[in-house]
Image (cartoon, rainbow, N blue to C red; front, top):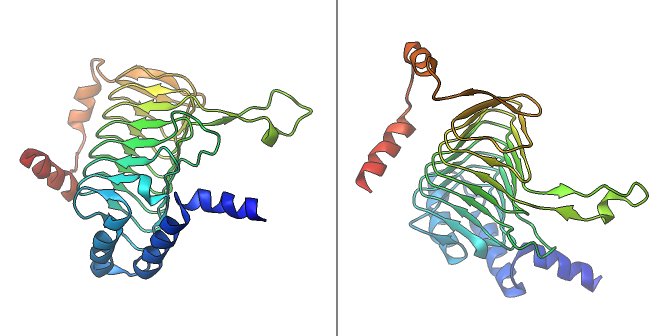
Amino acid sequence: MKDMLRYFLAGQATSLPRYLLEQTLFALFGWIPSLVGIGLRGLAYKLVIRSQGLPLIENGVRILHAKHLRLGRGVYVDHGVYLHALPGGISIGDRTVVMHNAILHVFNFRGLPHAGITIGRDCFVGEANVIRGQGGVTIGNDVYTGPLVQVLAVNHVYADPDTPIREQGITAQGIVIEDDVWLAAGAIVLDGVRIGRGSVIGAGAVVVDDIPPFSIAVGSPARVVKDRREAGIAERAAKATIHLGELERLRGRQAAKN
């Protein structure tokens, strides 16, 4: 029983006093809705997380190992997000948005050396995304992900058919997603993959191999079908009706000030 209790606490916070402090703050402030709640959490949570400026955290966000969570300026974390930063930490860059019900999960009790999740600035993590960082996930700047995207830097070993898979351990090589990548709805990125700068991954694609920069890749397994720099792609885009939202305009003004 004591061993299980120690295991539970180790998954929640760095120490028992830290656990009590974090859980007290989350219980007092975590449920409060509206701008009032965001403001109060912004002040209170700075006691337990590392944040530049006041973090914009909606109600109902679950945070474990808050000591290892780092938020840049203007980061927004939507309702129902789950952030588990044990032990390599989660770092989210300036002006990045993490939408509702996303899961960013490091959870490493196996001593994996590169465990952690790093997300750059001006990114958008879509609704119900899952990012598993046991092998280390590095996401660059200006990366957008659609709803239900999964980035999974971990894999189970299943080589021995006579041993339960849960007893055979895992592998965790890590994932790198370079700047200005768009992962469309439902795309899955598996462990050991690097997606090159400026690439587009189609909806529902399963990425199992590296993707060169400026590629358009679709399918399961994902295969490159075009290079974004090919003749004709820019011309077709120019004929489309393009809409920019207020978020893009705000980010443009903030980036110009910096």
